[in-house]
Length: 111
Length: 120
Image 1 (cartoon, rainbow over the protein chains, first blue to last red):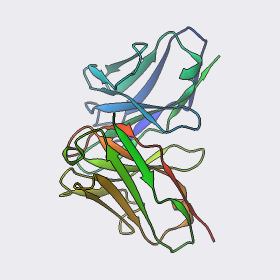
Image 2 (spheres, rainbow over the protein chains, first blue to last red):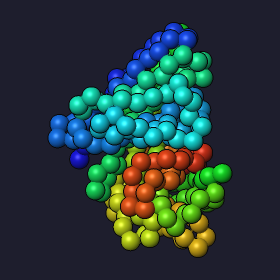
Image 3 (cartoon, helix red, strand yellow):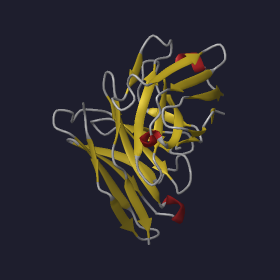
Image 4 (cartoon, helix red, strand yellow):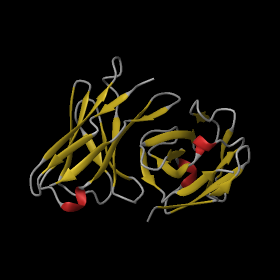
């Protein structure tokens, strides 16, 4: 069963860019993941599906400022031109034949 | 427009039971797997259970196996979670989520959640 590891927190300035990372456990480096955003007090929102070679498909209405990339076991979410509304928790998700797992989440602060 | 609306949450005593429902609209419900995910206040997301589009396959987290049962009624476009032998540690907001495939994949749409509180 895969394990997803995320940094607990990150911060960046308004208008800048930030790259969040989700790392897959050993033996699972080819897995597809999904990124989700959860703003304070709200339900999670699906951002994108990200494959091992770096191709990604975003959910409906997700701004162009959000993009994904991959490097080995790392799956990245990059947010450009940071806005105040991007301050949120970001979770990655993956699955195998009979179980699903979420990373612990990264709390992004926009300075 | 895709919509998922959970209901059925509330206060229940330890050892009690509760059934959650998730009413779906805006997509072909019978073509997609569906999941339940929960979140303890101030904590991260925890996967609970997934059911395939036809209900032929069901999957559970170890923490709820044997106590929770997921089901669906494709004619009513509704997902259910029957929760028995509830414990204090089951207290959480429960979200239903649509999967991106019939067998189960990424959660590509979320409901607004329903709060379950297990307390005496």
